[in-house]
Image 1 (cartoon, rainbow, N blue to C red):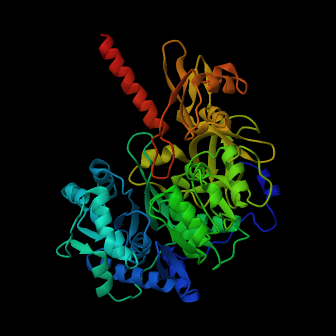
Image 2: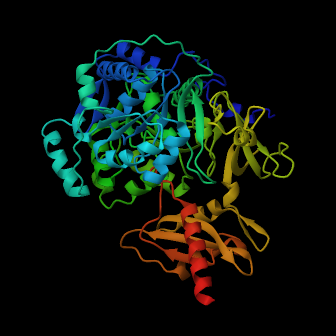
Image 3: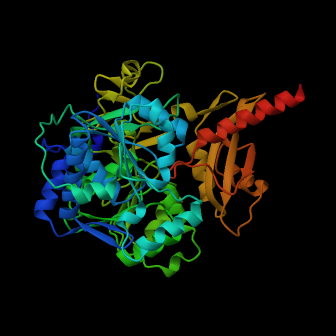
Amino acid sequence: MTDKPWLKHYPEEIPATLSYEPIPIQSYLTRAAEEYAGNTAIQFMGKKMTFLEVYESALKLAGYLRKIGVQKGDRVAIMLPNCPQSVIGYFGVLYAGGVVVQTNPLYMERELAYQMEDSGAKVIFTLDVLYPRVAKIMDKTDIEHVIVTAIKDYLPFPKNTIYSQMQKKQTGILVKVHHRGNIHLFDVVLKNETANEIDEDFDFEEDLALLQYTGGTTGFPKGVMLTHKNLVANASMIDAWLYKCRKGEESVLALLPFFHVYGMTAVMILSVMQAYKMIILPKFNVKTTLKTIEKERPTLFPGAPTMYIGLLNHPDISKYDLSSIKCCISGSAPLPLEVQKKFEEVTGGKLVEGYGLSESSPVTHANLLWGRKAEGSIGLPWPDTDAAILSLETGDPLPPHEIGELAVKGPQVMKGYWNRPEETAAVLRNGWLLTGDIGYMDEEGFFYIVDRKKDIIIAGGYNIYPREVEEVLYEHEAVQEAVVAGVPDPYRGETVKAYVVLKKGVVATEKELDAFVRKRLAAYKVPRIYEFREELPKTAMGKILRRALTEEEKENLGKNEKEAE
């Protein structure tokens, strides 16, 4: 469909096409345990585990899963924050021949019940404090067994002895779960099992490794079917892009949630594949992150824009040494240019924007870390990845600089949506994935996203792309976070509204922001309404939920109309 003009920008270290060893994901852990047995695989709040220890734990878990009835192709849910158990559980499921169903630990009962019903998961891993939530939905699902763990199980002394007290104080919850019946304790399982390889045939191209549920921006979340090949291919592409990094020598700050496909591929799978040390934090806290970077000296920091923004806006950032960071690829949301420049100044490392989606395992594009970058661009398609901009009217490829829908093709593109053939057919066309994102390609082969198809604001007949307005707002020195959305307007159909979080201790008025934006954008793009907030709604990845704000606007409009009747 395209002549791939982007390839001329590849440095000689990055090949245009890669070879993928046809082995399942878990085989990379087996290999790391053989070649780097004593190297630290996981560092978690003072606790260290070697690759050999992780491998043996995963095999023990796999053996137990087989004992309780898990067979090849069965779905097993993992509802855990980032912790050693989430890594051991992931590889244990794969060794047993199962399919991982990544589940957000923030899910409430309704969301959890839907995902378990839809996936048909037979087993779920969860935390002790989350067990009551799981117990309430079991009779609505196919779940037969629950494997329960606790954060304290993998904390060093004395942290492990005081953790339960801290947890009760913070959450008001203290759950005691016993190992009996269909409830199993993770630590008891590993104490009593032996580590034996399970002989199982795998079809590299066809067998599923993962059901990754999308965020559900339209309708109910869909299970994205990702094969072993999809995930191995994408992790291999990441490794090719990070060509200055050395196998067995790097350490990765594991802040991105493993239950999100970006954290799972760019942190967990890549780290196991390349024998990197994972410095795991269960959640993002600015001060803890700054202290961890200074103390543990990670070299790689895959993240999301809100993480980098949070660090840069901490008043004490200059007191911390962040110079260990070599490179970061930012994903999940647009990376403001000002944030990129400032983060590179502070750390001395490289920060570039990447692009992807759950349906592509997830990464398809990124700017070069050590090479030419294009400001405001998502960069170049990755090795073995084709990309094109298609007309919204005809579906035909468009020439450079014309705006249309981004389509991608490559070995990382999903097999389809779980049990949804019609929705699969709507987005997969002859191997091409229609992303739903609107953008353009320049004549050099760099791609730009102007917005989500469904986020375009149509005001007075003009198409307005929220990202363009947000980029301008981020240039204002008082703005910490900003998101722009279309809200109903009786005259224009929709009008532009900006939701803004100001930096702490800084004051800015609507009038000041309006004057700032008007100097930089056409009048029809300028927000007509500003709303200042303490915080913005976000996903677990830190992605700002524009949809939550627009739904809130609709609810308020409905209330006002009722009151007016």
